[in-house]
View 1 (cartoon, rainbow, N blue to C red):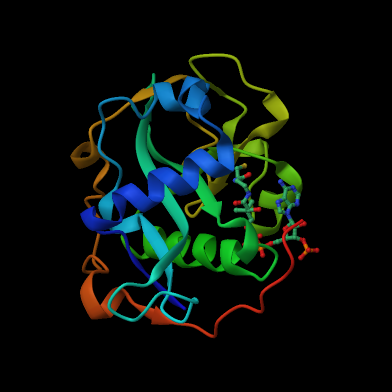
View 2 (tube, rainbow, N blue to C red):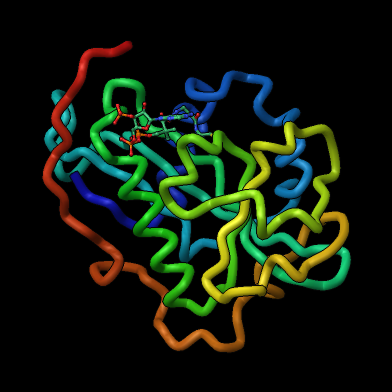
Length: 203
Ligand SMILES: CC(C)(COP(=O)(O)OP(=O)(O)OC[C@H]1O[C@@H](n2cnc3c(N)ncnc32)[C@H](O)[C@@H]1OP(=O)(O)O)[C@@H](O)C(=O)NCCC(=O)NCCS
């Protein structure tokens, strides 16, 4: 199993994975209003590739998980990142892959100098990575959302909790942090070779 940076060639398999995980109406969700017409943050978008999956090979591995991030900006000008979507193929779930993708991409974001991340997702899952309601209490989303699913994480204390107002779209380059010191994690430097998760029966 390889965790690596998403490439353009992965786009088709990611769309199929997301359609299966979230259903065909996923793009009607409020969070998609913040993604429309905006490129994701390429350095933080990662995939898991299984080069030992039956019928696949090292040259043509199976794409079994994806995580993406978008830049967003609050009405007061605070720049942050929005995590999501993340999806793991059903027959690869509960083996730690989702957690590894989240931790690896958050580590990249912090190393690149980003100060915070927010998301809309299930708190019982995201709490374990440090996401809570506190940092986003001053923020609003541009559409209906269950508030207990709107969560944030600060790498720099206070960087998100001071933010106020409606979230809107932001061009990727505008949130590229001025303090970034790490090189973008691409190519071999961005590849982690992992033990293949133990398969579980589809639930
Ligand atoms: C959510 C998801 C990405 C997790 O991936 P994963 O590889 O199974 O995650 P991990 O193996 O790191 O963690 C699995 C654990 O999280 C739990 N978990 C998964 N989704 C959860 C949720 N929505 N709420 C609470 N717990 C959840 C599982 O029950 C499992 O617990 P266990 O280890 O006690 O069995 C995956 O289930 C998925 O793709 N789901 C469909 C798409 C989706 O809902 N994406 C997230 C949007 S909020």
